[in-house]
Image (tube, rainbow over all chains, first blue to last red; front, side):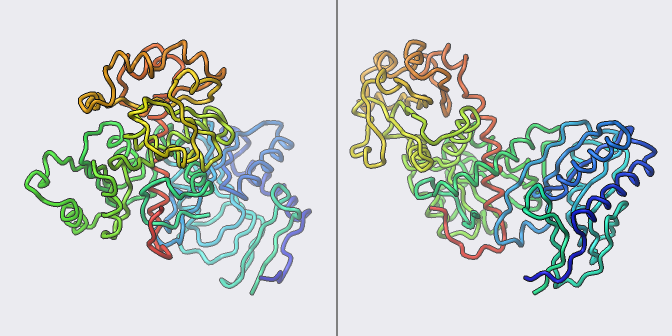
Length: 178
Length: 313
């Protein structure tokens, strides 16, 4: 696949995350009882970055967890081989917390459905909100994001790739096509 | 790398990558058992049958819990209460079970090769839970997982396996797996219990236990099957305990921080002394990790859309 368009560069990603951090604090009326849970893999890096930004704004450390949704997928039957779980690490009590799920790209919504079921198995949060860097549309379930970095109309033939400096040489969001 | 096979019949022929995939996957399943809600929906709607032709508490319970924690429906069939006592053959029993739409059959059988026979004739995934003197692959996987958890690695370690090597499927599966992962394996036991040509499996053979455990990182004791005495393979339990039992003195010959393992059930005072079994052994860790490793195996085998229906070794 080749690159069709650059959607966000390094500065663009950073600005989007700064705005999302402010929006999370605004909507939740501050950082009390807030916790961020990133979905493996990209979402985990974004959740950690959001936690840093929230600390810069409010001077408070909010707990950050990571969630692997492999065991909760609905397509385990139809995949050629099973994906290897990357590990879930939620070391805080989710009970009564305001959880913000963080993922890089929101697409069909099936990952989020799996993440919601998974997190409920750890306890009963007071509420769960969703933050994504890119919402590319094409939902197959009634799920929407509370905080969006960039709304991006795409075709299903295209692929949205989020490259982050934690795992990649570059940092950008691009659309790839055949 | 993917576990694209239908069955798990043995460790023989598995690559280091395949073994590591299972052990890595088991890491995540270990966490599931430590949560408040010890259940994930990965095998929801699947039917798993435990078909055990030999007595077992640990392995059968471990597979049952593994299946249930993956949300599968698990049925246990113990042979003493089944139609097997009316003379039904293994294959007929299995085909009848499959006719009720099973997805996975876990078999323990006194005949080597029984799981392989079923794997070839059934659409269900077959997991070998121990067959005759052949293999016990999930035991070896949980042993390797335990070593990796406790010592951080397997490559380059010296592992002494002590006991009735000839009649031990646990020993055989561990030899295949540990050598594939780069451990140096020593086997030790009375000459009557040592298979001929065992050196061909890249192990070193010892008849003197003091030498076998000297400097070892891992001491894996095997259960002495007391009925072997009637067959004349060892003269008496007390002599066996003196020559091949693990006691504090022998353990002190091993490397500092060496771990003591036993697949259970133990004959206390025979192959392992109580003080060694109760202090500093990892025997109960093995049992804990067994559930995680079996969850990983069941999860990996349950993938649909398999390209080919080959058996894993």
